[in-house]
Length: 362
Image 1 (cartoon, rainbow, N blue to C red):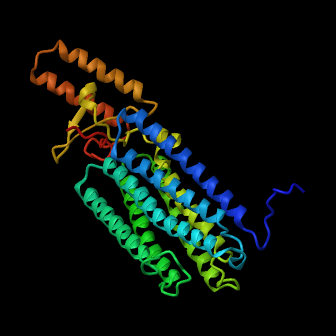
Image 2: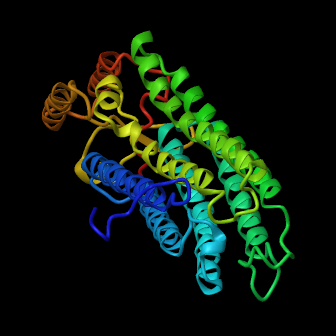
Image 3: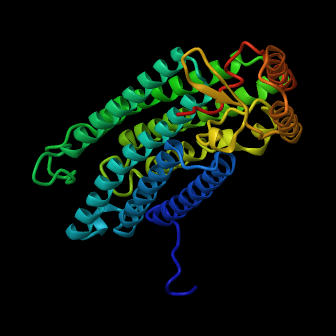
C-alpha cells in the first residue's frame, strides 16, 4: 500500500466529504454554463437571470472551498485526534461555509424569480413573484445575521465555547422557511404553465420540468433527517466525526439548487414549448414582430422551436408586402391576420398573453 494513500474507515470520513464536494461543485459549474449559454443564444443579451446565476455559482464555489478547508483540517475524523489549532480552523471554515450556503441558496431562488418574471406578463404573477423574492431576501438576512453571532463574540465560530445556541433548532427554522419559498416558486411556475393553452402532453412536459425543482426541498428534508440523526447518534458529542453525513447532504442541496435553475432551458423544454417563453430585450432593434399588452408592455414571439423558420419567413413576407402597400385599413387587416396565423400555429390562444409573453420592450 502506498504510504500516501488515504483509507476511508469508521474514523476517517474526510475523503467522502472531499469527493462529494468536488462532484457537487463540478455539476453546478456545468449546469450554470449550460444555462447561461442557452440563455445568451436565445436572447442575445445579458439579463438579471444570468447575473443572479453567476453570483449563485460564485458563492457556491466559495462554499465548496470552505468545506474543502474544513475537511482538510480534520472534519470527518475524531475530534480528540486533532490539535486545538486545527479544530479552530475547522470551525472557522464551517462558519464561513454555512453563511455562504445561505447566500448561494438565496441567489438560486432569485434566478427562478427572474425567470418567472420573464415567463408571464400578468400582473398577479408579478406580484406573487415579488412577494416570494422579498421572502427569500428576508430569509437570507435573518439566517445570516443569526448564524453570524451563533456563539457570541469575539469567536462566533467556536462551538466548544459553551455559548452557542442549538444548531439543530436553528437548522429546523431555517430549513422550514427555505422549503416554504421553494414550494412557492415551484407552485407559481407550475400555475403559469398550467394556464398555457397547449396540448396536454406538452403541458405535462413543461410542468414536469418545473417540478424537478422539488428535488431541492426533498434534499433539504434529507439534510434535516441526517442532521437529526447526527445530533442524537452515538457520536453526537464529536463535532468533527459525528456530522459528516449532514455536511454531505448540504452539498447536495446546494448543487441541486443551481442545477435545477438550468432545466427550463433543456432541449426537451425548448422543443416542447413552441410559443417561446424567454424575454428578449433587443426585439425592436432586430425589427421582430411584437404586440402590446394591456399593461403597455410589448411582447414578441421568439423563434426557439422547430417552427421558427416558418414564422420568420411569414414575418419577412409580411414586412416586404407592407413596404409596398399604402397605409390603409386593408393593410391593417393583413397585419392582424399574420399575427393570428402565427399564434394559431404555435397552438396558443390569440387572447392569451401567456404564450406571447416573450420580450419586454423599453
